Image 1 (cartoon, rainbow, N blue to C red):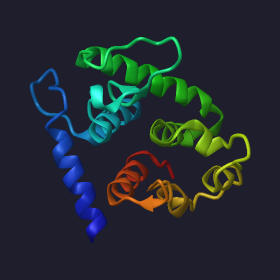
Image 2: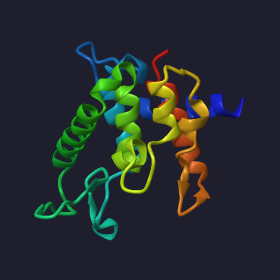
Image 3: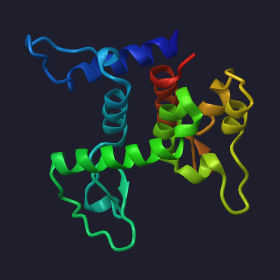
Image 4: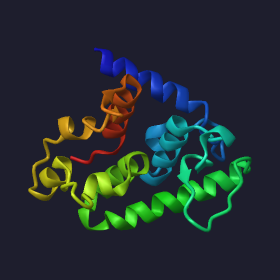
Length: 169
């Protein structure tokens, strides 16, 4: 199955990025706490943003008015900023219980407004299903794979992996 190969490839790649445990053995991605898994996942897909990615810095932080972060920030600074941003998003979705982290990870890439709705844009079908208690929302989650109206295969893979890593039954 193509999806299974994608997951396996992703997990094998990420094992290279895992910190060593006290016994100097590599830790599996699945063994990390969920928040740490989310950080690793976002780092992998976002990559470190440089000058050409302005107004994004670090691992995809969008500069806000009044912020003056440099595009050549250290990995430590970028990691700290990512964790802060992810925690803020987690607080936005805290009332969604076991789906809060999944929604926070998605919103890191697409924005909170795409999920909650904003202005003339309605609440997402994904959020409507979650609120209704419908646990069959794979299709709605993976539907967040378009950029400028076009489906991008890389975003489809990203959504599949996020869904697999963070959906709680």
